Image (cartoon, rainbow, N blue to C red; front, side, top):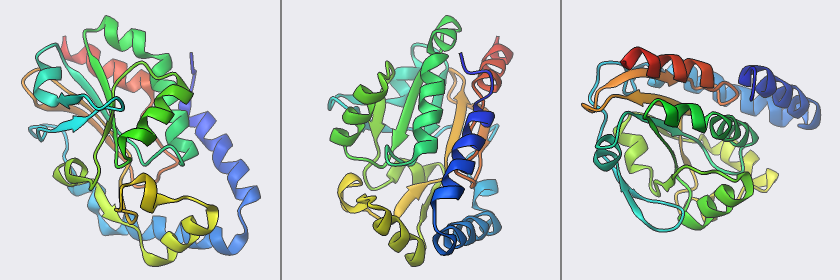
Length: 217
């Protein structure tokens, strides 16, 4: 199992810094500073809030509702940007590695992104994910959690130059992404633990999620 997701994420970040031209990296860092300064992460759904309900299609087209998941136990809900994001892929792989530990605690793990179902299916197959990967096309659920934001135009252009076809994979909503986040929701639908960080290179540690699940007992 992953000892420290943070260490792996830092390694990916350092590798990317060596490969991305200075000018483009400066624009990416500028966008990160602007999002952090907006205070949106602090205003997003947090501990003590009732988790907004959702019903979204899975990678195979089946509808999955938060209420149905909660009927079976607590829920670990993670929002990610898309399969084009290496940090997201690394975080999802780490969650998959700990899926047995989540399940042993009676919890259901589910991931949400703005990608269309076909893209989610490709990701689930590539990463061998054994938990639902849901499509929030248009980011309605991410908006409900206070996570959705629009990329600044200059960053959208950088992503296009990188070959990230967000117009296609996000079903026509190319500019809107979620702030990466992870929630532990108890069976009553109350958020009991939350990780929301505007820095996409930082993600929730599986060990912290497991500790939060243990606190529910």
